[in-house]
Image (tube, rainbow, N blue to C red; front, side, top):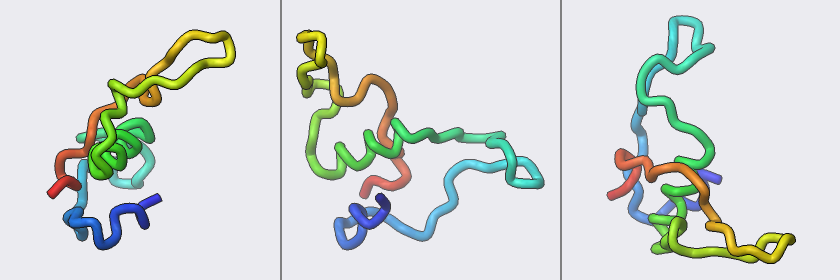
Length: 75
């Protein structure tokens, strides 16, 4: 998915957060998949929390139920 950022003005070459000595668990600035998707949406100009899609049950649900853009990746 990171190819979506290539050439799009995102700042690269960064280390965001930290893990324990063995790299098993985040100890600072944990980032999850929803955060990455929120970053892509914001980078593309999509209001991910405001856009809804129909659920099979007929109700409208947001395309991104949680997550915040990773501010370090946004130019």
